[in-house]
Every structure is written in C-alpha cells, then in structure tokens.
Length: 201
Ligand code: VGL
Ligand code: ZN
Image (cartoon, rainbow, N blue to C red; front, side):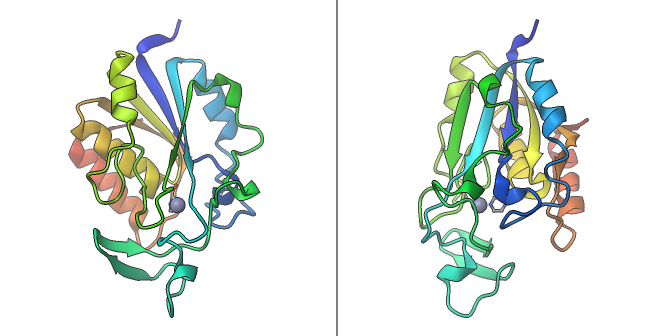
C-alpha cells in the first residue's frame, strides 16, 4: 500500500524537454517508464508543468541582442535566457505522450507570470512568491517527498532545495532524472543537494 505521508513530485516531463523539443534534455524521454512505475508507490503524485506565455522574460527572443543560454540581470537576480519553450497550449508544453497522467492527483503549472521565471515547484525565482504546493502537501499530511523528472540541475534541484527548507524529508531519485548540464551545472546541483541534506538515491 502506498503511504499517504509520501509524495512523488514529477518535474516538467514535457515534450519541449524531451528529444526533438525546444529545450531538449539528452535522454529526457528515457525515464518515463521508470517514473510511471514509481507513481504506484506513493500516496500522492504531483506533476509540474512549465507553462510560459509567449512574451515570457526568460526567453532570449524577448530580449534584444541576447542569444539563448546567455545571462541577463532580472530585478530578482541573474537569469539564464532560454530558447522559447513550454508556451501555454502548445504541443511542446504538453506532457510526454507515455506519461501516465491518470495516476496524478494534482497538476501544478508554474512560470505563467511574464516577468518572472519559476524553476522551483514551491517558489518563483524571486524566491518569495509561493505556488501553493507546500500548503497542498501539508494539508494532505505529506511529510516525505521524492523528486524525479527534468531537468535535474534546474527545476528538480531548485524544487528539492526548497522542499528541505520547508521542512519536508527530501530525496531525489537520480536515476529517474536527466540534466541540461550547462557549464557544470549538474555537478554544482549535486553538491548543493548533498550539502542541504537531500538524500540522493
Ligand atoms: C526548466 C529551464 C527553463 C526545467 C524549465 O524544467 O528544468 N529549465 N525552464
Ligand atoms: Zn521554463
């Protein structure tokens, strides 16, 4: 029987992060089967969905003279500029076709405010605007979180680091994640997760 205190948080298993997508993560699709199997072991399953308007400020195309993967200063700090991805209602924003949507209890959309990016499932990148996920989980009596999905070094890591800060016992199942790995971001994320007390499984 799945335990009601344990939730699986599936981060951004969307077409644009899979091979052929606008911000494809190498082998991003390979983890889908394993994630579907994991869902059965948890009392609560949450899917997050990166969900940007076309004029989102995290897109290089909305800044003059900036290439994708370059940096810009936003009011809330430095921001990597991405290729256009996960535009609301587009096929790229849809979940991978093999992901078991029926097993999910909640779908949380994030990144829909044009002025601010949102890597974490808990807070937007200003680090102060909550998504409401912590309240949802606490009200359901959830104390333990396992994270899987894309991308390990951005949305998975930021979500897991916030989860620890919020007092959840937190684990990242590395086998069921894949990384973008921009300038060593995978190793940096792993070090931060270890230091914060996230179990890497
Ligand atoms: C993500 C970059 C931009 C992610 C989302 O899901 O890790 N990365 N938007
Ligand atoms: Zn995004």
